[in-house]
Image (cartoon, rainbow, N blue to C red; front, side, top):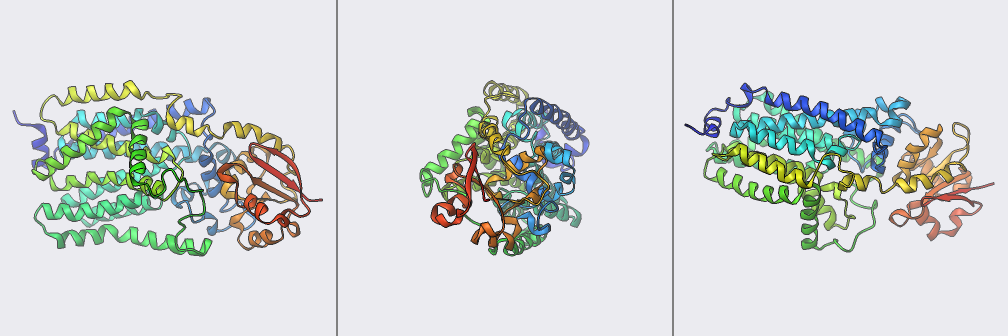
Length: 502
């Protein structure tokens, strides 16, 4: 009896085109995602992560601001998640709950499930491998939590999955339509999170290597790269121009974190941190299985046991480059940055399991049992769930400050750095505050003038004095005592201090 994987390699139309499995798994992901969102909503964790609130604020402030306009999209976070949520979050109920952003996250993971199943079926024809990979993704408690929030990782993962799958399809049939799809998906991924940037580089390289391996030549590969890179190039050009118009720099590389000397410029320590993050988020079993899977895939591809286009799957590993580079540059360790690597590991392990000639179902079952033994859905001690609650005690303490703020909607404007207090501004929406009640960095010249002589512009100043060593206003007050001349400290709590002038 022939190996099913051999049939898949010989016939590009075998597997995904004849199977309803990808759509079934996508449907399962949608339903399961909705259940997870309800679970975390009941636990009060939907918006517990400060960045979840921050993303809602950036989308909202495009229209709700002292100086509304497209420049409010900012230049540090990439714009696509905020553009998608721009209109929905103008509805107060959706802004306060993050409902529209959560819906995008759930749909994104469903798209990821579909792409993952398509990829594995294309190269192996194995339902066991496809199901194993998707189940690992859907039951990981850290990813399950993120897709139940307004965070941007789920959208990134869905778009990377689409970009890789459509690139494989384009390499197989070479149609202009497929290349346009792949280019569009990659451009959208590049505008979602920075993890997509090294993935894009790996994908372009894999395209050339695939053409070389199949005998079409490097020249043909470079032509395909030009097709694939066309829309991403336009997207990146727009972004750097937008960044220059917003903050005066073509690309923001620092100034938004305090360097951590433990990892800064220590390559070995950074590599260990990324590997540790994968083990904590995905389990020791998944991490070791992923390392073995990568070795097997490279071996099979080199021995021509896998099609030339299978090398595209390895572009998933590009998601590890961003956290490695960030920590090497001194960015504080954030375990969340390794979540995409969990998905990459699941996809590659599923591909390797599917390629095994015998006992693939038993191997998949054993692998799932090993992963579930250490990572269970809705685990309250999962790393991302724990990280998301870092700010909860401070949130409760900030209520003392809230009681001292002026009434919202009046002539009283509060000066505050959105770079550090965006999450608090979103919390204050429950007390009736709009973003136009605050003067912040996004207000351009108004902000710059207030920085010089705040007393001439506002009666209230809100600043973070503790987290990351204090925000830019706290730092300025320490450096220039005259900055707070005429202001009196009236309330504090959760690291936040409120000043008022007569």
